Length: 469
Ligand code: BG6
Image (tube, rainbow, N blue to C red):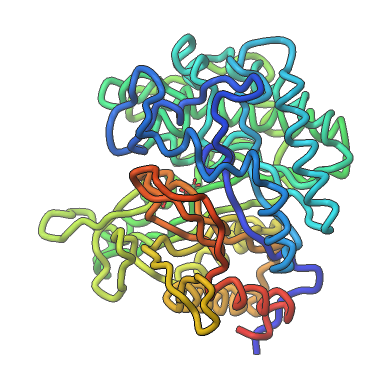
């Protein structure tokens, strides 16, 4: 039998830019997402365009009270969302924050706390203020550290008695693959030098340490974590060269958690930079800052594993969560080609735990699928999403196995607990939620909410602390 720890933090996860809407209300400035109508697939637009579903999202900004009530009905203990940086500092480089933006999150956190739901807040989730992308080229610029520091200080001070759990950057390791979305870097990916990209990585890592320092000064009880896109890599064959290829892939991801946890660049990263002519500009005190202000816990998203070979020719490439890989013949895939691998989650949990012995937190996991609204036996509209229940049940079962293996896990927040706009494809039809939102890819729909079959299933999982799995 699977046993989850007492006080395990069950809940759901979202990000401001994918569901709030109200993209230009109450003083909010534009973010990079407001000019990315097609996700990471195509280049940005000059201005926000009507086909961009994120501008309206699922209108959470105006409907949050009803939505939080549904989260409470499921029994959520924790709720992960992000603060839209451009609601607080519309351009990103101002010195005074936007009070209306701050007030919105005060109201949201109060609403969550009213039901005993702990907020878990991401400071930067793919929504850098657009002005910082256009005027500074995002995180390639050293000044972003100062702006992010000011933003972090502002929200830490404001919410110090309401929010205990914080994440500094969502999937910080995705910057190599999605520089605009992840790093606010306006220079097109094809034109971006390795030097600039690694410099941006360095700036984000320094900023993360700075935020950790500031946060702990403001409230020593804060729990501040990093957040990485986790993707265990399997070798395509037992050929040691394939094994090494898989290790190299993993190192690109470990680099970020290694620095957040151990506070220094690992040898394999130094070697890579040396061999590729990358020379980081490191300001006085930055290495010490990173060394001294490491994270309390490691959080991560997990959707799939990847398979790597030293010579990928002759194998088929698969789709994937920002990073791809080769198709693993032992795994099925979602409708979007993401390979489904519950055991990979147990593996990644054990890998992180064995590497760091720091508490872990799964802050994203779930199945993006097309759902159909149908009538149930009582005439109510619902979605019969047994496929989602199966996916989550299988993954949570492996989470239980990892806990039995000795992994210390703080909680689990499933991704997109209410349907929202996809990050990679900017579609509404790629749904993850327990709650269906009536909105379509062409923007039509009433925005009404409907409980899916999985709603009751997750409610039982939480009520029994996982015993129903
Ligand atoms: C993660 C992101 O990459 O995966 C989320 O942190 C995203 O923002 C999620 O929504 C699922 O990806 P997608 O592309 O299906 O929305």
